[in-house]
Structure formats: structure tokens, C-alpha cells
Image (tube, rainbow, N blue to C red):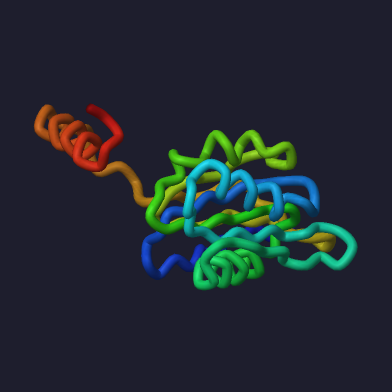
Amino acid sequence: MEIKTVKLENPDGLNLILGHSHFIKTVEDIYEAMVNTVPMARFGVAFCEASDKCLVRHSGTDNELVELARNNAFNLSAGHSFIIFMKDMFPVNVLNTVRNVPEVCRIFCATANPVEVIIAETKQGRGILGVIDGFPSKGIETEEDIQARKELLRKIGYKQ
């Protein structure tokens, strides 16, 4: 077995969700979950099929995001993994809905940070072991940092 990392390409620092699923209809069901949760959602989703033709299946509402998801999924080529890239929304808006899609087994991350995916590769194929989401901690927040965090959440509409 070989262990390697694959850096996700995300040139615009978009929000993304990376997960693991188990069935070919993942793309259709995630698509439906996204558009039924956030009207006018702009996203692209891609899924690595792990049997039969082993294709990267893809869909979405924004061609550039579909291409980004499709290219990242193919670079990962990890069986039954999926990736969603989104614009003008946050993962928190759809995360519970995506988790509740019947095919979804696991969410590895939901972030806009740089992501490195830790991959195990054997003669049979590839699988995701985990992710490196962002950077190491640089310290412990101060009272000033707490106030700034609370102000940001109110500014972007997530707290009153």
C-alpha cells in the first residue's frame, strides 16, 4: 500500500464538501438535496463510481463549478468519494441535508480552506483516509478575538 496526499484545486477559495457515498445515484440525490434546500443554489458535484465503468459522474447548476468538481474528483479517483463546490452559500446551509442523503456514508470536511486529501492506494484502487483542512493552530483566542468572532457571525447573518 502507498500513502499519498492529493491537494484539492480550489483557485477561488470556494466552499466545498468532501464525502464518501455508496451508490451510482449519489449525483442525482445530492443535486436534488442542494436545489431543494437552497433555492437558486450555485454548485457542482462529482462522484467517483467504484464499479462497472468506474466513471466520474457529475451534475450541478453552474458549469464552472461542475468542471471544478469533476476535475478534483478525477484527481482523487477514490472509490465512492464525492465533492461539491458551491458559490454564494456556506456548507452549513446544506450540510445536514447532504448528510441525510441515503447514499452518504461520511463527510470528511466542509470548508473553504486549502485541503490536502490523504489517500491510500493499493493494487485494487484508492480510498480516502482523511483530510488536512487548513493550517495548524497558532494560539488560543483572547477576549478581543472572541469579540471579533461574535461580530463576524452577526455581520454575515448567522447570529443576532
